Image (cartoon, rainbow, N blue to C red; front, side, top):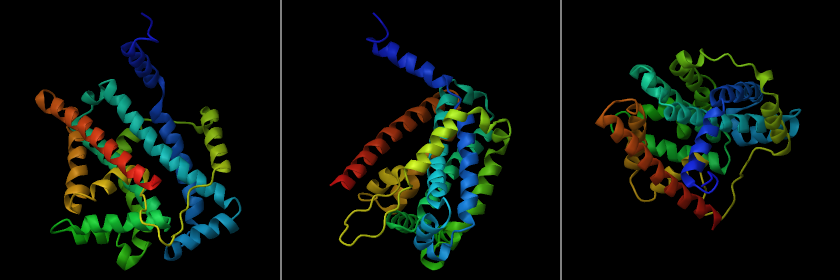
Length: 293
């Protein structure tokens, strides 16, 4: 029987094809483009008037819409390609050869990447960004003991508007990511010009499709958050913020940290991570369907 009609053979071929792609190099290329376009935007952005500031950048700054779209798409791709890089490492079982401490730092870097992406959404100041910021602030405030302090450190949208988020997005989280990922990041020597088709495609997409911007609309009953936030947003409908927004994602992070463990702990961590992803995918699909109604 040919592999085209054999599901197992098709999956094996897809796995081999997936592992031939240099996900790590491509993710770093998108990181360079994200940082470059982010610097251009930061020179024009005003956190005191976030939505108006971005609207002005798109209209008045030369190629402003292009730079904003490039930053948006490059940042999204950096996170997605970093996830693919992580999956490739796990499939080839290279993660078991990484010292436990360094592996935990890499998982922390991935979480920091997600926070950078999330704060980028909040800084838009549009309907999606404002909603995401309020939800994140309420989740942090639900943490007993140090939740208020953590919110003042990361968001403080109610008291400081976008200033704290802007400082963390521009400096704080970026420095934290570099500290957590430096030992792994420094091993790559990536030259952007060696990926011309990939770079040109990303530039073309940024030139043709503007980054999304959703102004407030009266009578709107449901505002969908960022795509990676949909599952958590849906879970918040049924569970208290501390359980849905803190413990639920924290258990997944812990399971990722335990993946290289040998024996029963490693198997249990892999099983839990797979189950968590399945549950989160279902929650995200439900949350996405709400936005279609």
